Length: 346
Image (cartoon, rainbow, N blue to C red; front, side, top):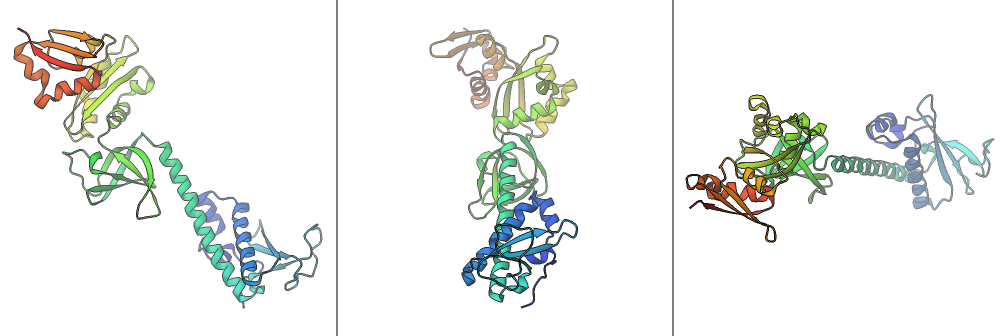
């Protein structure tokens, strides 16, 4: 059988169609690691086909980028009885090509090499993607909408495949293939019907609003402002409580921006969801009152034991304080952590 000679290009030996340098550049493998995989595969083929106890070692010519095969062991093969000077404890050795092996061994070795390298590449790629997914977990990511299957939208985020389940989609939003979509990435999982990793994305998580605000309001990243609480009813309305750690910075004004430019940029990424920004207060009564904006509050009475806040408003703004279908009161309660009962003043 004819085969690659001692100076055969490595891609010819591996049967992968990629040079060693291309494989290394793409996946960061060291030369030593790749040669070890080839060695193990060829030696496995020798044992499986002929039961040989000989071992094959490989070295790469640093100048030509070509392989040199060296075989050693007690059985003898080809010119293996010719000793190679300068090698101790290895028995007799000689340079050989795969073509000097039997056709059965050469064929088996080629199949094993190709399968192992392909599997190794898949494993390293999955490790890289898993690490990438973990690094980006909880972060804001710009994705491309690719397709919809059974109500689930699949998105592309660089090398990562993300999926948006119905529960993570904004109900009022209509997606289209090819559009850019901001999401937060959650946990990764292996696709049920495929061998690739996919990451659950969310458009409904309060974390999305938090990350969008952080991307538009530099003071949040600098630490001058702190987002104390965020709550949403996706696609409809959200409330955000922010605190300024510097007296000269207006917390609410910084988030809204000059002429509302910052908050409009955030709302534009949320399918028109209305966002109420309020200043956090360490005084629970004041905090509850601010959370019920835009309704003016007459008084707030707190029951610390039950964490219930009884709020009194003018009868003319009762419906505004409660909100459509109780939405304003509901969001205020979630934002502050207090149960809120609203009553009209006598």
